Length: 360
Image (cartoon, rainbow, N blue to C red; front, top):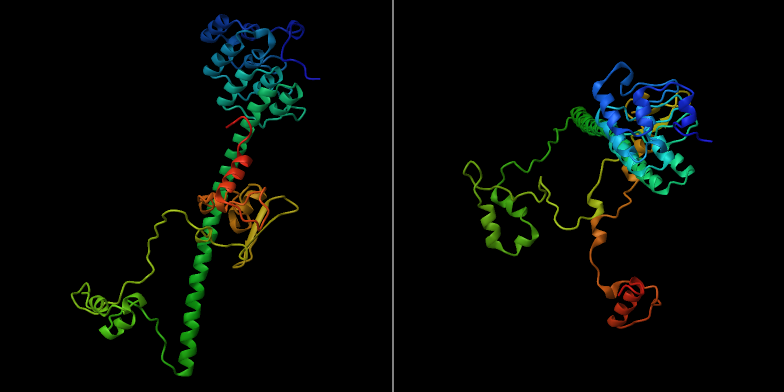
């Protein structure tokens, strides 16, 4: 079903270069001599009639026990880790087929593509499963996971740039609405012959009587403290400065923070995302212009997760849910609801559920 990379029969049917032959039989000293001399027939990425390179030939049972040492030597001297044969087999495909765990690990470290498919549409992980190489399959599965996470981070960075632009458009549109409302109010007041209502600014200098009215409730019970606050000098040396605003420009998060305090701008009612039926390209439109615009070339799931974080909450609970609790307040499966037991009974029931026999 899956022929080996190179055997004696296939090697005898065609003339192999000296470097191919040395790699096939794991002759490390000969491989070093040929690579360092670099003749025309000993080039490290030279191909035979089947498109096999020396790095393919070394991943065969005939090259043992020098398979790993020959492979690392070829990789250190510039061998292409993702080169494929005429059948689409890469060195990682061959290592997975032969069950070479150490070679699989070094190929992954060298940047081998775990998602590459051969002419039959099989990945290295699928070949390892076909040939029942469980350790190699676990190694490749971890490599697939790492590859998928890297691709996801790249896609998230692309969508994050679009998200920042859309948030800026939301803020700009909000400011424009404020300006439009102010202009409409001014036009309405002019038609009615009414004076224009100006915004009240707390930075306007006020008398001490106005200042006393703005004193917080906790200070009204202390007249002396209120008088001292009212008589605080201003920057220009005068008095009558109002108390500091309770809202501060800086927020310091200490301890556990509630989930409601961390909010991202909501774009669900302002941005629409869909996939075009004809081209398959992701597109989006906004409520401001209605123009169809192309979205970054990413998966629809990543695009929706970044643009609409409210619809996809984090799978990890916020830190406030990791606060320590009293063991008495922890509900146990062995305790019926409504029955009151002593704290010692609760501790014993908790230990019986958590600890396994033979581990305490």
